Image 1 (cartoon, helix red, strand yellow):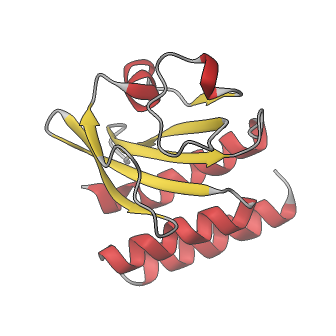
Image 2: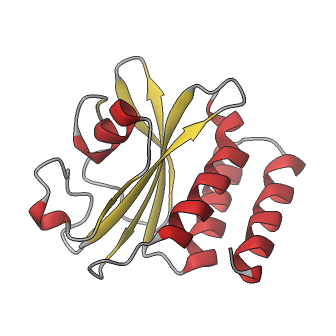
Length: 152
């Protein structure tokens, strides 16, 4: 990973460990993740019973689906596979649940705790096609691992 990406992860880790998992701090964490890689939108979904439920997101406009069944969407596909999913053009993926009408590409990363259990999903979106690559996947996997404890 690039040096700046590693430094951003260190800042996220320090912030996550310093002060708990309040709603305000979770919102600050997703904003740190968004700013670190210039993503358009970042959200954290927690698995609650049989649904994904938004816990924190960037911006002022709420997503179109603040909660949805764990069997649906790209989040559902990532849960089923246990692996990150990168979609270069969401308009051509039938699993996509539109968060915003301007989204063109998306990456979903399972948030896994120290017991190897998936607790939720870290979701980043872009208005550009093919916006996400391996560096984004690595960054989001590590960021998600650093803050997965907040979803217990």
